[in-house]
Amino acid sequence: MSSFKIIFVHTFLMSRSSATVKLYACSRIMLPAQERSVMLMKKIAKGTHRNVNYVSRLFQPQNVVPKDGIVKREDSLSKSQKLMHDLGVIRQASPGAFHLLPLGERSLQKLIRIVDDEMCKINAQKLLLPLLTSGELWKSTGRWEDIGEELFTLKDRHDRELVLSPTHEEAVTELMASIPQLSYRQLPLLLYQVTSKFRDEMRPRFGLLRGREFIMKDLYTFDTSAEAASETYKAVSKAYDNIFRRIGIQYFKVSAVTGVMGGSVSHEYHFPAAVGEAKLLICESCGYGTSLESCVPSECPECGHGFLKCCPGIEVGHTFLLGTKYSVPLKARFTTVEGKSDFLQMGSYGLGMTRILAAGVEVLSLPDEMRWPIALAPFTVCIVPPKEGSKESAVAHLAEELYHRMNSIDSFRNDLIIDNRCNMTIGKRLFEAQRTGYPFIVVIGRKALQPVPEFEVHHILMDKKASFNETALIEYLKEQLNK
Image 1 (spheres, rainbow, N blue to C red):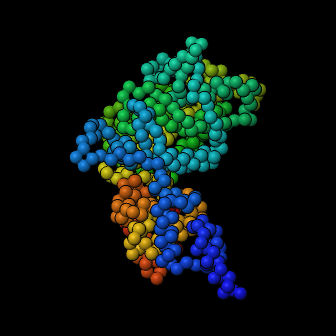
Image 2 (cartoon, rainbow, N blue to C red; image 1 turned 90 degrees about the vertical axis):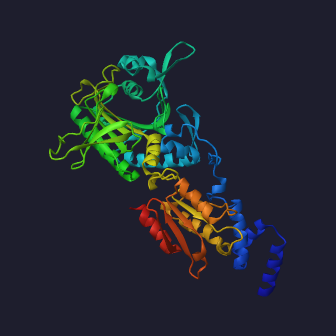
Image 3 (cartoon, one colour; image 1 turned 45 degrees about the horizontal axis):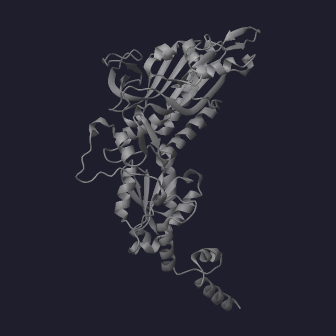
C-alpha cells in the first residue's frame, strides 16, 4: 500500500504544475538534490518567492556613465550626493528637492525607529503639526522679518499670508496657548514630530546636506520654571547622545550661538567631514568644543591644558533653551501650584533626519563606493547565490534556506536581501553589493559544496572576509550588530 501511494503521488506530481509540486512539498517525497537546486535556482532568479527581498525587484535606478562620457561639474558635488544619486538612493526633483527612493526610505525609517525609541525613554509624545502655518504667528514673534528671504511664504485665495514652516515653534506654542487652564500637574510636556521642513536656500547644494525641502525631527518642551526646563534640557541632551552613539559615527557636541531662534543656551551636534560648512574648535584633551565663524586655535577654556584644534563639521542636530521667547508673544500660559497664571518655559530640539543619512554616507564612503553606518544601512545583509549553470549552483537552495533562517531572528527580520540576478557572475554582484554599501555580504561559493557547507562573509566597513558554517555565520553577524 505504501509503495503504491508513493508511485501514485509521484506520477500525479509529474503531471501537475510547479505550484502543485509546492503544494505537495509537505509529503515525504524529496526530489534529488541536484534537481531541487535547479528548481530553486530558477525560482531565485525569477524572484518568485513571497516575503523575500530580491535585488531584481528593487527600484534602484542607477546613473550609468558611458565609459568615454564626461561628467559635468563633478567637483561641485559632495561625495554623498554623487554616490546616493548614482547608486539609486535619491533622485533630484528640482534644485534643492529630492525623491527619496526605496533604499533611502528604508534607511530613514531605521533612523526614525532609533529616534522614536530614545524619545519614548524620556516620555516624549509624537504628534503631527500642519506644514502650513499662519504668517501672523511669525510676525508676532518677530521671525517673519528676522529670517527674511529664506522663509517660504505664500498667500491663499483670501489673501492671507502663510508660511511653509522651516521649524514649528510658533505653531506648537499656539497649540499650547489654545488649551484652557493648562495645569502645572501636566508639565513637563515633551512633544515631537518627524516631518518635512522648507527653507528657500539661495544656493542649495550637496544633495541632502543643504536642500530647500528636508525631513527633520523637532521636539518642543514645556516646563514650569527655568530650573525645570534646564533639567529637561539635560535629559534631552542625554537622549541625543544615545541616538548618535547608536548611529555609530563620531560626533562632536559644541556650544553655539542662539541666533534667530533665541533663548539662553544652545548646542550643536556635528559629524566631522571635509565638506562641512561649520567651523569647529575641538579640544583633543577633554572633548570640549565650540562653533565659531572663524577658527583661531587657542587654549581650551574648559580644561586649561589642551589646545583647541580647528576642524570642519556637518551640523546634524541643534538644541535650544528658549525661555519665554515664544510663550510671551503667543500668550502660552499655565496655572501654577499657587493657582496663578504664568508663562511656559520652552525648549526646542532638532535633528536633521535626511541630513544625518547623507552625512553618514559622506563620512564613511570611499570615492566610488558607498558606505552606511550599520544601524542605518537599508539592508544589513546581502546574500549572493551562485551563478546559474556553475558547479556551485548545485547548492543554490542554501541561499533561500539561510535567508529564511536568519529572517526568523528578530535582529535580522526584513533586513536581508538576495541578489538573485544569477545570470551574472558572483564577482560582478559582489562588486555591486560593495558599491551599494551593504555592511555584510554573504557569498555562496565553492566552500558551500563541502560536506558541511561554509559561507564567505565580507565585512565591508572593516574590509575583512572570513568563512563560517551556517550556525557560526549567524552568531558572527549577531556579535557584529551588538558591537
